[in-house]
Length: 221
Image (cartoon, rainbow, N blue to C red; front, side, top):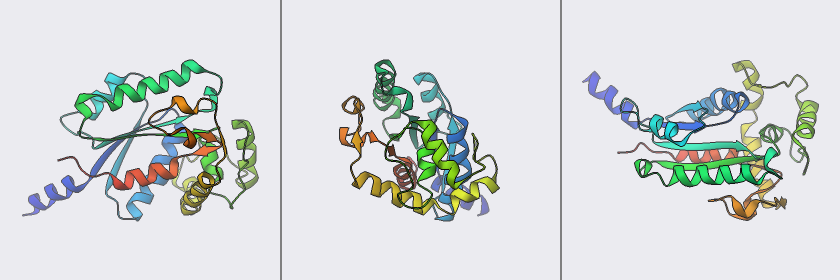
């Protein structure tokens, strides 16, 4: 009986691969988002990895020993404002991955930050503290006004993650308010799919939307 119960519990858990570019994103996802999902009753297990090739992503997602139920791409757009080749590479990655026949059943999505992932960190602070435009350096300088000891790739420990965990609902609400205020659209907005052009703005964060997506993932039959 115990074996059957364990098998049922295992099947109810969702497994998600998040493909991200740096240690900062990985640390936040594993030390803040993962505990937040557990605390809110969502049985989702996340694996963060960096992949350069689509076949490597597909191979990981379809492992016989532990296939995944969803794949999400997390990227910064800071270096893409004048780099059309980089934008094209993002577009091509999404097209190839999302149309891969082997991944037909699993949930997919892409989530961006501008001018950097740290903009999401700013949204954990009081409302409207985040600058409306700026470079990644300006965002980091603003963040240090609220979190004086900030250095990359924070949060590295559970204690460092506590600052963000206690304010995650504030960040989600601030992100939603930011979208409602319609910041300036980025020049390459129309190129990024499946995003609607009006959602690719300066500034922007989609980590709140990522959290919503994670909570919606269900195990693939």
